[in-house]
Image (cartoon, rainbow over all chains, first blue to last red):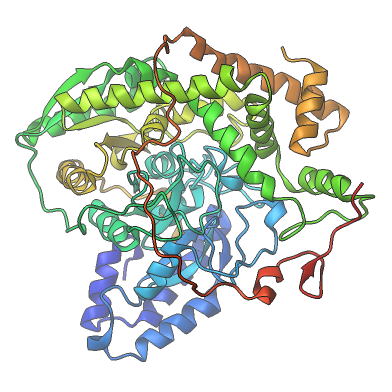
Length: 486
Length: 93
């Protein structure tokens, strides 16, 4: 069986027909992890015994008594709490932390019978765009091992691209699902803010964070989002979806209007990315959709607003890591404050410290109005621009990332250059909008993603549109690791 | 460029401690980032309301009913130092 041709739906069907057992399926993926992960580095933890025990329990259940997805494996970004399974956010400060409870999304997948293969690498506390800020290890792009997989959900994207899991969960605060999906040639979706419960997601910036799927195709994204969506008493900002999702079937785009965001095609956008994007626009036309260029002048300021709001919220959220209740504690402190200082200075990496410092600065007395209030007003301006745009078109499109995957180490010395990776993805977080990245083609052998953004709670329509585009573009090439790994 | 004293002040508020050369590097990085985010000053934001939350939500009330919660043992199980079901910390000040 060729692991690179398997979607999660195919796994489900093979289990349903009895062609494979859950144990065989789990072993197939564990073997692939074994074969390639010393080069790719997606996994922080592989729960071989736990996954095989879960699979054996599924196989002991008669097929007609199983739930639809029972026995299908999945892997999880290491900021989702799984009861009893080490969860570290790829940070030294959480080393050894074993959550006493499941995140709501984990509980939902568990109840549906999915099997957890393990935890995936990420930028520490989801702060970064290349996964190079992990305190544990590098993750490499399965298309070119000298390049980054993107971030912060780099492990989640790389593991799907390298077929180490049929699908995975990531989280997206400023592009952390979509950008790595784009760089690794997989599908990644950030739902409308509130569609998925954040309970048990270790918080970065609470007004922006959303959990979402990374998959091999659009239909798998629809299936996984449907499994995790829903209102939750444990997250007062969760609302769920207006109706359960159905499998997208749309193949033409007749009658749909797409707005091309002009601001994202400026000089930051690589020519090779632009070329693939133009091809996607042509494909939308060919499928009967209409495309027009639109200006959303405020989105260019999204990055600046984000780098006030996200660090501000992070500096507050990360105050809980103080060495008292969980994780690392520095030894030899003379008193409590000294223990806080030492623990946090030893436990956090450089980028996390940088963001805590920025957040603390912009929230500090005398600067609050000049920075935080201004950024929140910019957020209003951006949301208004989107609202106006959705009065004219049904969906907005842009490249997901202005560049293809960049070289390891290329941007680590310049925080601002790294931040620019998220130029096209951040505005959807600020406005709370759903957005999906689908593979649109290759530039010099590296994947380029197309981003489609929809109005609030338009997930069903967005997935239908993405599915129709996917039928036209269909990336059939496989990453280089597929050749090397067989 | 923000001053050294400001960086030290913010580090104190953040409960972070820096070595000499780290302090200089952070002063440089923070200044560059603050210069960049200051470009928001070019926008006309007069009369706009700040957005804290992107999707309009209303408070919803529910009945206040007792439910299950973590046991004390589970709640303190991750503590680096625990005694008699309590977190142990160094003396204060």
